[in-house]
Image 1: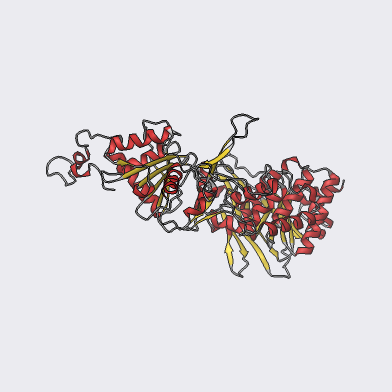
Image 2 (image 1 turned 45 degrees about the vertical axis):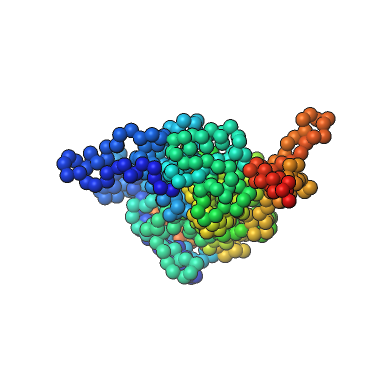
Length: 306
Length: 285
């Protein structure tokens, strides 16, 4: 992940003029983020990696996509990719979603990075809602587009108070909300964005991934970067970090499971499946398919070859 | 003014506690008090809400603070509870581990930690001590999880036990506190305060605003709980009957100063200070 244009900047202290001159940008570079913006983002990312789970504020830039359409993840990706990077972008596990295609084109067109749909080829995977089914490796970076980074938003609105609660690791009200959920519904109903304790210290929202993917963050070999463009926050889970879903000792954390569900395309049962509802109430053509389309396609190809 | 020595080990010692609002000019002390007839300086720049307040509370003992509105009794309680800072003095508390801490020099986060299981407060307004949009059980779960409770079954069990002890019908356990009556809210507040078995509980007008019959029920409950659990308590009230029923020793405050201090029954039978005499006469009338 080398920078694309840093070679063109002269970092030496000028002999004439002021040091301020050194900060004046070089001639206009191609791309969306200027070098200052990238530097600020990288600093925020480094801070986030140093303090796992802590939400680092950053000056979210205007992006050519609307806030709420992945502007946070996009800024992280643009700040970390270089010419030798290979980028995969998925939306709900799908490489061909409109948003995924547009973001992937935007990144590759403006940075010179190449694109892929294969997890094994990618160095940076930007995602909304899913972690690919294939196991990621240490050299890969997962970039998540986060809508609501604050896990405690549901129990407290006051930002100063939220800051205090995180600073003192005072998460009792989070626990109360889990308690109330269990009392009212018999189970903890929180589905996406399940709150997790990172590195035994900070509670994060694992937005927007489903519960299915939560255990895959625990001591994962890869780096996960969470970017919330609208809320201007970046947080990270470095490799090999403990990620524990908040749950009571006697209420085990459970992932989504529909008994008997099977992908109608590749026959998979041990994957995150999404339901295609019947075309109308009378029809019986409702079915399940894999959420991760690239993974599902490869399984079908492998099955047809064997 | 005689100080009655406490026979049991002291758990809370308030020493020359003072709180001045506004200008912190020391001259304000002489310009205020019962002799002057005001807690506010003539130029209005400071209010000496409490000054030179000293008392101690023994383990398992209930100490009362009585006075009319504006006498400084609630200021004293809030300074001990940590809800606001003090201008002078010290509040030393015996900790669970046997050490002694001055509450006034603690940081806000240390204070919050203290409030989890060593020092609980029951407020006049249940909204100050409870989250009204959470169930009765959830309000207790808040304290239990703050103290590290992570077992759902045990939290339920302990919450039910506490609510039963404070006479809240168990079928209301999973109802929002917002739907509760005033007396019931106070009982939930009491259950929450007792959740982690704190050795000291502060009561700020615990029954003010309740119907007489409901108040009597809550008072009965507080008294039996204090006796049964051996909790040390500071009870702040303007109501004679509350102080008389709950405490063995008390002090009378007026215009931010202590005017009399002693055994509760003695003080009420034979008041020495003119202000106390008027107070007792008014209450007995």
